[in-house]
Amino acid sequence: MRTPIMAGNWKMNKTNEEACELASAVKEASGAVTGTEIVLCPPATALSTVVGCVEGSNIEVGAQNMYWEDSGAFTGEISADMIKSTGAQWVILGHSERRGRFGVIEEGFTEELQKVFGDTDASVNTKLKKALAAGLKPIACCGELLSEREAGNTDEVVAGQVKAMFEGLGDCSSAGFVIAYEPVWAIGTGEVCDGDEADRVCGVIRSVVAEVAGEEAAQAIRILYGGSVKPDNVEGLMAKENIDGGLVGGASMKADSFAALIDAAAASA
Image 1 (cartoon, rainbow, N blue to C red):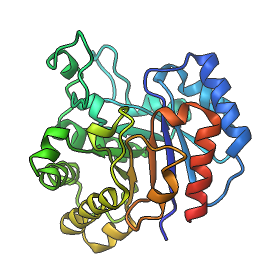
Image 2 (tube, rainbow, N blue to C red):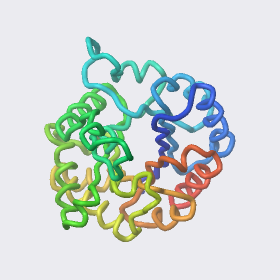
Image 3 (tube, helix red, strand yellow):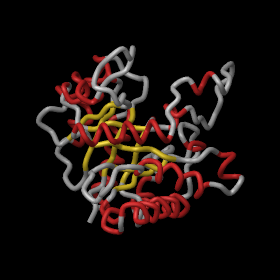
């Protein structure tokens, strides 16, 4: 049995005070829940604060991004050791918003401007290697644009991203990282991928892992679904064979809704 995970990605939200308030509320509601892993991913400025606020619970903390160098002239970046020094144990890598792959182009912004962060398959692979070497637990993201889905290229796009993650990793059966399938068109749009289709694509991901890292790794690796996960759809998603949890945006920033997701994950264990 794979232990479910419910991870909250707070994106660029919450001051230190607000982050502690939310983390404390999640701790109060779910800090004693068993049967699932709970991960909170606040902005980097609040990592140490949130670690302190969930102390004594089963909640762990993760960063939203990291750079692959240990130190140097990389203004604005944070390293694996910096993340670990806060007490955080996880890191999200290759989120579509970091890759510059957006489902919705905001009014007044050009597509070129929204590609400013510039993560690629190659850079995600490099970050993944560094995170694993440093002892962090990565959540590596993949997912297709609406145009790619409409063109019938979902499987090809997702498989390519997953194969790139594993490039040069060698035997990954005990690597301990997590893959999150996030259809870009469903992130922050209110749209959710049909449960059967989400499970099918997660099955494609698992088959790719089997191809590049072996069947043992494929059965062990946990695959999360991300894209407008909410209390009213989480039970259906968690019932699927290949979905082991969620990488959650908006619903993770309210303690009561995130607690409902955590309860659903624990019930599926």
